[in-house]
Image 1 (cartoon, rainbow, N blue to C red):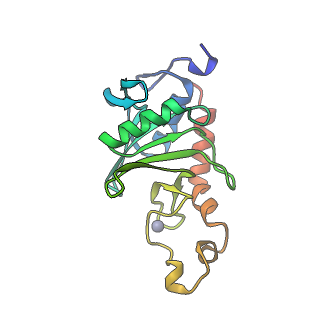
Image 2 (image 1 turned 135 degrees about the vertical axis):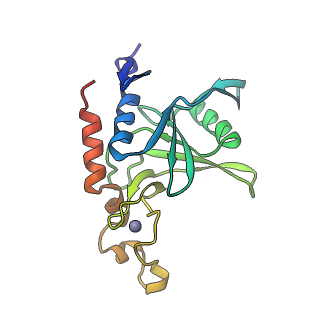
Amino acid sequence: MRPRSKKTLYRGVLYRSKIEAKWAVFYDILGIQHKYEPFWSDVDSKRGCIKYKPDFEIFIPRDNHTYYIEIKDSKPPEEAITKACGWAREYGDVVIFFDLRPPKPISQSGWLFEWNDISDQVLKQINIWWCECPKCGYLGIRQYGELPCKCYPDPESTGALDWDEVFGTDYSLSSTRTPRLLSAYKNAQNYEF
Ligand SMILES: [Zn+2]
């Protein structure tokens, strides 16, 4: 067993690995509702039907949206992607996070798998990050750190070239590296169990 797979007890829950427990700390610091390993289900995979449960179920009240989170310690292998697609088809959005660190330019730390009714298939989005609006504090999971609120004017309505110009700086990094998020990443990484 790899050292990272060490079972870790945190607030009465036994996590299969320390990195999962650190993610639980991260959610607690930010006040994000989370449930560890919510339930088992059968999902389709290339090897036929397999039993699977994601690592976390989290709920974002302001989005009224549930995400299922899978934690990996590196970019997800094909099997994890197959399971995420099968789950997304049945139950809703799956995000595979593989880096509990603030994003850097062009870095990836999460992939989203979402069912699309129109195309009748699961779509994958990369560059999925936790982000926070610097004005209102709205926390969400978005691609490129796009803000989940309307605190900044849409570029089209102001004649600005893009979101960076509206924001006056690198838009995606400004929303994904706010003081609150940076502190949560740091404290979760350094948490002593
Ligand atoms: Zn806002």
